[in-house]
Length: 308
Length: 325
Image (cartoon, rainbow over all chains, first blue to last red):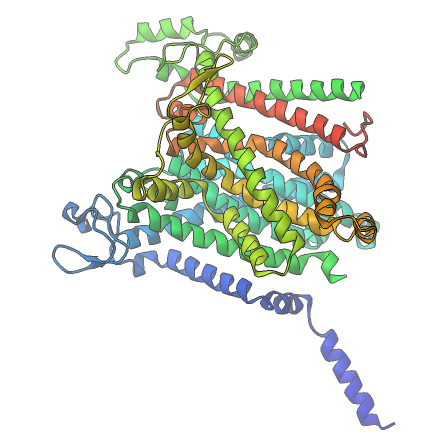
């Protein structure tokens, strides 16, 4: 037996074990082409939303750039002065639907992401605290979660907006209140399983402060199920915002999200002018499907039972 | 069982009480009832008179007790818009919502169970993959947008079905129903499909998961080995065990269907509770909003209670010791 082969064996072994969990995660995720494609679509949508003001052919909320004479033109028509082509048509005020959708993306994504984030932070913190401290605090928090989850999110959000009135901030508040409970339940479930493990015991023996144990030791190990829930909740938050705005209790008319754009086209649809409602809804659908497909893949990859 | 039921009823009661507090706070503290009760040009004397008349000068806890007393007697005040007691307006609208929700639930079972069964029995066939792909779409499609598309295609484009309203109704048991007339059924079709879409997608996934879990079981293998006809194996051995989750989820989801009928009713101008609450929010009809919220909370508390009881009856393995209640 020569030294060379042994050395080779060693290098091979270190190479395999050198694959970090993050790398393995990415490799497994990338195994599904559908999921990767969805992720690309999402990245594109986010870029479109961020650079909406640069990409959009017109600023749909600058009255100077609107001409009512261009109103209700079908997709592909040119404007009166011939300076512009409305690829997705125009609404009743001569607003280019493509520009409207790009600006609407900002509001839809902004409201969805921020409410999902705030909900995740609040819900996860409460869930972890409940699992770690136990006792009365846990009972109180979890009863609140049960109470919350016995009502559908749309109803809770509707109730809150009935009192608060329209407004972007109000919608975010309503969505956070409607959705925090799911994070809390998931976080507590994961944390209950984790907190009996030895590294927590070790941290306790070393007299690490409780808060540090919860957020520095417990939280990172509870992340996988939380990430899966968060993707699903993000999709739900975006749809919920769109629905509330469609019903006229969500975002204000001056800051239309995709849902409000769909609502604006409702009456024109009855006269066969489908594009005002159709394209914003299609954009919404593409986002939701992409998020859900990414979420499905994450669920498969992060499922601990599958890895075992 | 009895002790459990008492305990469960007690919890339901506490939930109702908490919700009255929340709704009361929402109405009295966040919103300003005086503003909505008064005409915009009212002077100070008029203002004080209204404040005294509605007891708004009393301490908050006293106002709450007055509110609670009214709520217990079903008195939420007169609707500003209808000029009738708010509760009776809701009761007039309730059958329409229940009719829509029931037909959507029925539709989701009729369509969803066979599709899910097929996808579970032949998981690798292209048809099954199409079904499952469709269910992802069904989860992702925003209800309100699908409603618009249905109107666009079937009402505006093809002109097959009406796009709004309940159509002709006929009285049965003292209530007006749409499904008893042909015109009413035509009006019921599009809203039911719209409302059922999400539920169908869920039913497909539920049934498929159930089938793939049950097929490898010993008793299915044994029945097949014994020579039981395949139709009977699926129709009896498999179906029986799928029905438990299907019934439970259908029941649990009935509440969601009622909640989402707010969207469907608004699109199809279906004269139910859901459209009523949206109209009331627009018109700031506060007594109406309060009455709706209290009724919807009651409906949900009852649904959750019934589902819990049904679950224990359907599945004897669920133990009803009072600790787990």
